[in-house]
Length: 116
Length: 106
Image (cartoon, rainbow over all chains, first blue to last red; front, side):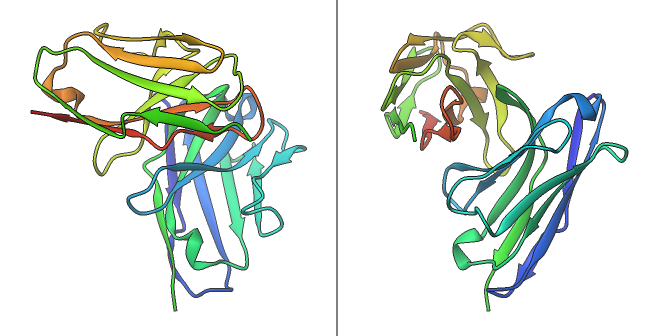
C-alpha cells in the first residue's frame, strides 16, 4: 500500500524558515517524480514544486521560486521542502504527492501557518 | 500558464440525478485529470488521462473531452459523492488546477 506521511508543519513568523518532510513507503520511491501541492484555507489546490527521480531537476512556480527548495533522499525514501523567507500567503496545508503525469497518491497533509 | 475554468462553482443534486462538471482550458491540453476531495481530507485521484477511472472509483463516474473542453459526469448521484472536484492539467508547464466544483446532495 502506497503511503505518504508529511511532518514538520507548524506556526512560524514571517521571514523565517521551515522544513517539511514526507516519508514514503509501499513503492519504489526512486522510480517516481515527486511533488508538493498546497491548499490555503478554504481555497483550491496550487502546485508548489516537483523533483525528478534522481533529484537533479527541480521545478517551481514563480510564487515560490528562489524561496522554496525541494529535495529528496532516495536511500531514505524521503522528500523534503525547505521553505525560506516565508510570507503570510504561504499559509496552507502542504501535501506531498507522487507524480505520474497526474498526482496519483497524496499524503494526509501538514499545516503551515505563517503569522506573527 | 494554462488556466482551467470549472463550472459550475457549486451544484446541488438529488440522489439518482445526473451531474456534469465542466473544465475549460485557456489553451489546448492533451489530457485532463480529476480529483475528489471530501471535507477535511486530502485529495484523491479520481479520473486520469481524461477518461480512466482510478482504482476503486465507481463506474457511475466517467470522463470525456479533448482540446480545451473536458467533463466529469456522474450518471446517477449517490450521497457519498458529495465532495469538491478539481480538474488538473500537466500538458503544459506549470501544472495547474481548476478552482473546484463543490457538489452537494439535496
